[in-house]
Structure formats: structure tokens, C-alpha cells
Length: 412
Ligand SMILES: Cc1ncc(COP(=O)(O)O)c(C=O)c1O
Ligand SMILES: Nc1c(O)cccc1C(=O)C[C@H](N)C(=O)O
Image 1: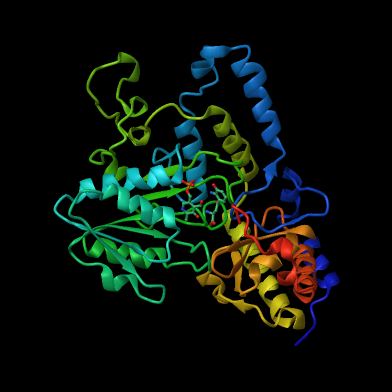
Image 2: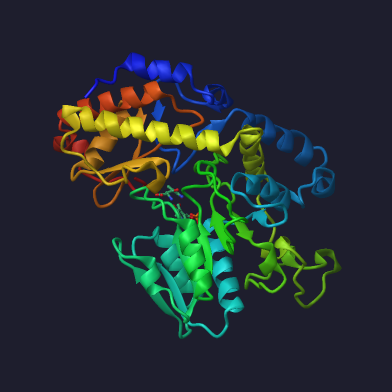
């Protein structure tokens, strides 16, 4: 096995077509940020976008900014720009609310489109909010929820009773990537609809939602899209479903004539019917600044670097004697994983905390997963080398014997 040197990694950086993209982000000195799958780094343009909104649009122009600064149409304007990153033609995406709320809206809309069916299919290992929202959306009804086991095949659960299938294409713990086209096809063959949770793929994985015939998708903008803490989520509804699809959070922003103040709800035509009420304009500006960074960027180039970074990270850990006790739980085959690398290690929490103290920020997911999200726009190959060296040093120091790491923090 040939050794991988730091110089070799620096050479890869010198040839990196995305190297300049790093300059679009603020990255604290001395930090290697491997948690872009939880909260992305801050785009440098965010400050100017917030300043403009606070100093001019809000302070000077006040209420007129709903029209003058086009605040009112931000959800669909941002949605159209975002849709380009996952193969959605304009008019099918709005940026709004939270992923949890958008899951609820999509689920209830899908259930309404398949009124004679009573089964929802999902995964036992889903990010919990997805399962909680199924519970909420089916509360008090006679729906059955079928959950596929981690090693099971979703195909076995899909039949003519299934109204909707709700799945994350990239698993938040392991990074495993599902075959979206196959599952969408299987569901459609059975007459069911699919809702894709793209939280761990939007902005980092090229996808063709329209071409694969997707029905619904949701996701957040604060991870790989770098929209900022709590930035609004998005929802995609394929154009062919929009006329029939109804969502239950029928607030006035989804009304056909919101300023007619009619007593009865009449959904507007098109994707805006998936809005509920007033959107957080300041937070939306973070999404706008984040999308500016992606202008002119080809998602295939992003994916190529993401794959290369993950491969390098996996190889560096595999070769390092100091990391011998870590068990890779992310698929080694690039086509089967998203943009993260995770290891199972019983003492992983203390190791992640010790690494953070040394400036290498990853995260931990119970019960024993050390998780590293690799954002290709601001990470360098040399960062992979340094991160693994520091990880090995941290493991060697046995941080699990340090009482400071005995108690788990509220947010891990
Ligand atoms: C797959 C997945 N879905 C949903 C969420 C959360 O949604 P929300 O923005 O509503 O907190 C997350 C992460 O927080 C996630 O990883
Ligand atoms: N959404 C988060 C939050 O509100 C606080 C802390 C972390 C998050 C996350 O995004 C967690 C993330 N969805 C995960 O995959 O674990």
C-alpha cells in the first residue's frame, strides 16, 4: 500500500477546480470544519445580505419592502434557484417553514391524493422527526405505518395499500445513499407516492427530481446549503400534482387572494399553496446569500470532489494504526453514500469532544457514531490529512477517561 503524504494531499488541492469556492466562506482560523451536514459554514455574502435588509429594506422602506424588495415572493424566487441544484424546473419549489412542517404538509397532501389507501411506509432508522411527523399526520385515523428494518428492502413493504413512502435518500447516521430512481419507480408501479427527505443531500448531491418523476421532496437549507442556523426549509411538489394536492396548514399565504381577506380558504394555483403564513424574511436572506455561492457551479463537479474527499478520508483512517479500533459504517462504494463518513466506536463521544478541542469539528450520534460531514466547497484535501492525524492523537490520549467528557452535552 502506498503511503499517502500531506504533500500528496496538497498536490490534490492545487489541482482542485473548486478551490476558489472556499474563499466565499468565513472559516475560523485553526478550525477544520467537518460538520457541514449539521450546520454549514457562513457564506461571506450573508452579512451584506442581512445588512441590506436591516439598514434599507426594513429601517428605511418599512412595509413597502413587501413589494419594493419583493419580500412577498421570496419563497418561490428562492425555490426556483434552489430547484436548479436538484433538477427541479421552476414553479415546483418554495423555501418556507421547517423540514418537519414540510414533511407534514407533503404527507397529508400525498394521503389526500391516495384517499382509498391506508398505509405509510418509512424506515425504522429514519431521522426521528420524520417518524414523529408520520405519527402526527396519521393521529386519530386508521392508517398503518410500515417501517423497513436497517438491512431490509423497502420493496418488500410496498404494495397496493400504500399511499405514501417517506424516506431520506442519505441516512443521517451512516451516510448510506438509497437508489432513488428504483424506489420511486417501485412505488409508482404500486400506485403509491414518494416523499424524499433531502436534508443530507440538497446542495451536495446532483439529483434529477423531475427526470426521475419524483412526487414530493423536502429538506433543510442550513446544512450543505449553508443558509444559516434555523434558515427556512423547502418543499418540492411536482407540477403534475399541484392542482389536486391540498395541504392542511391552509394559511393565508397559500390563499388565491390573500389581500381580499375572504372568509373561506381558496388555495392559490401552483406551488404557493404549500405556504402557510408569514415567512422569516431575515432568515430567508441567509438562504439567498447561500444560493449566490452556487451560481455557475456544476453539481457534478461538487459531487466529484465530495467523492474524492470521502475516499481519501476513508483511506487515511484505514491506514492509520491509531484508528484501528474504528469501524467504518459508511458504504465504501462511492455510489452508495452521500457526503459523510461515519465510524462506530464505543468511546466515540469523548473522541469527538477531544477533537473539537483541537479544532477538528465533527459530531456524535447516539449510540456510538462519530460522524464527519464533508462539504466540498470549503474543505481541502490537506484538511482530511490533518483531521485524521489529530483524530489518531485524540484516540491515543484516551479522552474517555477524562471526567470532562463523562456527561453528554444537550446538543451533540
Ligand atoms: C433527515 C432530517 N430530516 C429532518 C431534520 C430536521 O428538520 P427540522 O428543520 O424541522 O428541525 C433533520 C435534521 O435536523 C434531518 O437530518
Ligand atoms: N437541526 C439541528 C438542530 O436544530 C440542532 C442541532 C443539530 C441539528 C441538525 O441538523 C442535526 C441533523 N439533522 C442530524 O443529522 O443530526
